[in-house]
Image (cartoon, rainbow, N blue to C red; front, side, top):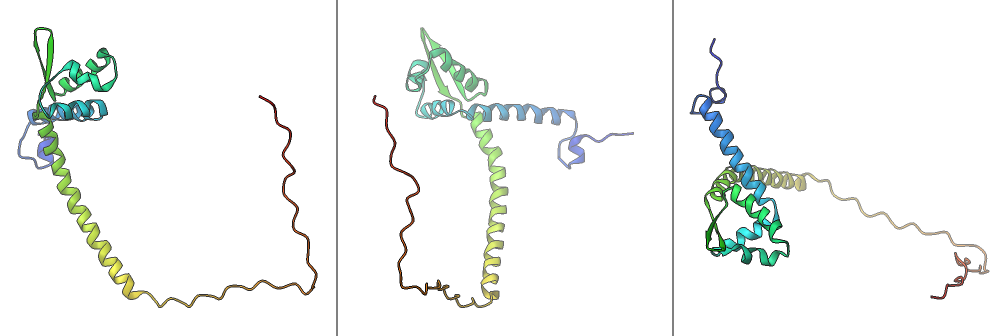
Length: 174
């Protein structure tokens, strides 16, 4: 008996285990990109590299951390394929590698189209609901008169309520 592949069950064009493996590899690469982008230090490094290649020292300077700690961030970015490092003598320079970021943008754009369509449909629905509710609302009842407090029959006055606490107590000298 033939067991269908996952791709056959869901109506995808490619068939076989290689397609499933390719999706897992692509998913791992995408996960690495989003994990790298999850940290504000790494995002600021990518922003700085967007203007051109910089040395590791130039990149680390504004972050106020040890060079060892900063290198860990660079390894994560390099592991995700977002940067490349080259060494010329004692200077290590980093440059932006746009490929993985473009793949993430393509992946996000599919969901952007989906959510934009859904949010537009929701907006139309709410607009229609609001429009029909205003037409079907009953007229507002007149406001109720404010209750009048009963007045005392006596002509005398009463004393004010005593204060809730006594005078201030002694303080310590410092």
